[in-house]
Length: 364
Image (cartoon, rainbow, N blue to C red):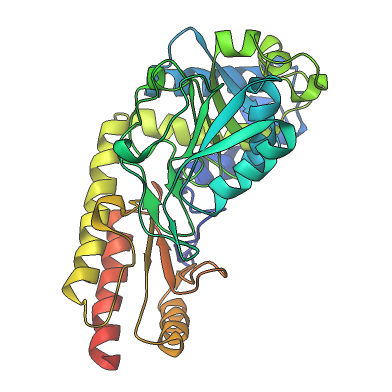
């Protein structure tokens, strides 16, 4: 393995497990003794088919996905799902509830408005910024809504849902793009979840969709076939050519997760990473400031500010010299953002904390 790999804190595409990359490297030119790369195989051939089925099976096992749910691998990313969810699940004459907790939930709502009737069930925006997620009591839900939509983790503002909202008989749809598989969750609490793979699960180019079969069957038929969940469910995500290499990489990542004992250990490590990093921020509160309320602090995207923008620029530049990249905050909010997804280890977070302590001592 090369000795030149940096510590990658990018928000997405994000760090991948080295072992998953090494497996891809070793199989790149000759996959399964076939004499060619997995990228060159037909998506309908047995070699790729085995990878596809293994990825689906591993995901079902890790999350205990019930048999009455489909597991789909689709193209277009989460942004396409912003449109596909209402196109499939929002019939004429019904309304959908959206909970606004950041930029991506705003984008999801904007797409849904083009499809049908929507309403905002709650928002935590304050002066254009989001510093927390709403409590259950703050959700003003419509009992007759077609579905309720949330964004479980907010990459830009660094907030995260740590509870699953109660929505009664109304299906809950969740964009889990930036915290999917950070821990195990009860799939039965949701009607549909979707997640762009490029944070915790694999490379860009594919989105994972887990959706209840009855919702798929009842989905609208007056939309193009390519945008119907039913079309992809009927053909096991092989209706058209899928992003085969991205799904292959998902298989590699999920296989490693299963070999390591599943998601319980993943959650334990993620919580410890958050404890260490937020502990440093709070300990050095005279220099570092996290704008997020404690109960909503994301364990995936840790955002914080320094005393001045100039110091933030210096922080990013010196961190890069020290072998840490991807720490600049989103252009819309500035500041610092450390994305500590599953593949970013505890040692990497400790290295960042050591740098933060040294930087504060020199510049405070």
